[in-house]
Length: 161
Image (cartoon, rainbow, N blue to C red; front, side):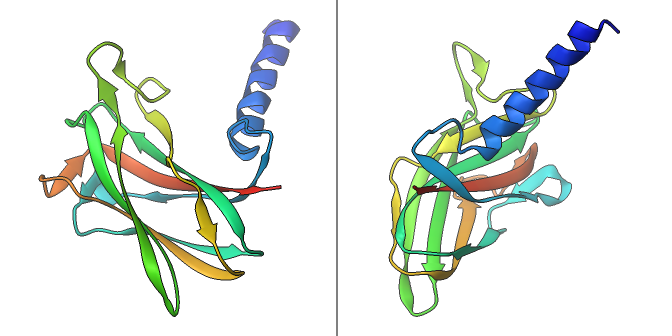
């Protein structure tokens, strides 16, 4: 392999890693938390909750980005989601969103060939009013009980500097 080709490939991988770990390229934020959960059998059941436990070091406004890794077996163009942020002793905050995985003009919206990865920033920033452990739950709210082709669901939380 040509040394310049190898250098270019390594540089691309580093750039992608820095992009994902650096808050999706946002200069005014830092990554507080990033993780994925696998979906059993690549079929997400409606009553299956994908949960993340996040230790928040200080109060502040945080941006949430959801991630989905999926195959072309997904039959829905939009996936309706319910995102719940909670902590003990405080009523949970729920946000209903629709993640667009395909459209009529461009086809699949995620990046990748066989396995697509889609980043979906939630429209609103969340105010987490105290330091402590928060629980973030994601579930789909589609009519179908099972969404086939969903491999992983992830979340990245960006805090303001």
